[in-house]
Amino acid sequence: MFNRIKSLLFALVLCLICGSLLAFASKGLKNRQQDNITTDRQKNILKSVGLIKEEMTYTPDQIKTLFIDTIKRVSVDEAGRIIDEKENTEIPGSKIFPIYLYVQSDDSIAAYVIPIDTKGLWGKIHGYLSLGNDGSTINGFTIYKHSETPGLGGEIEKTWFQQNFVGKKIVDRHGAFVSLSIARGKVENNIPEDRRKNYVDGISGATLTGKFLTEGLKETLSSYEPVSIRFRKNNFRDYKQIEKKQR
Image (cartoon, rainbow, N blue to C red; front, side, top):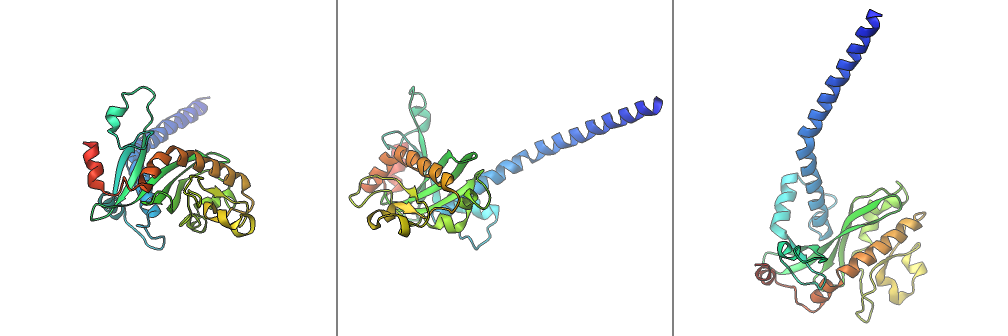
């Protein structure tokens, strides 16, 4: 009986010690984990505008410096106007959309990046879509988090799939918004030639992932269409002008 009590006390003390150590470790690593998440997102934004090369290795400090030097975050309203985010939150029912501007050394805006947070087959798909300053041509697409099936829908994180987006259009040949769609199979085999610029190759065996991503891209790009229209009209080309609007 005494030995059994000793064993139970030992197990209880061991659990308390292990639990305390795990809690301490979790709390101690929380800041580092958050830093890693931030760095990964910055890396994906930079990658979407072509400033990060797949074959090269970058330190967190290099990514942070490059991000600070080239990317500027601003907020826009439903009409695509640059706004002061703090002031606009006081308006009931107002919607705010973040965008990331790729600003070059001469203050010209080379591209803008839109966050993608959409439904997937098994969970949310998170990434970034970059468009050129013409407001219609895709510069890059990245995924930093998803729950899709490895080897099937999970291929959305692969370079071969993401590179299919580069050079595609979100407008038709007449300049009207049509978004971007994931084809079932190869674009050249399934889509009429005059619409191929608005489609990317699908993933074999991942039709539903393609369907959800297509719907999510359309919904997101529709929300940002007022911003894209302003880029098409050359309203957003100089970051200095945008800075003045924010003040």
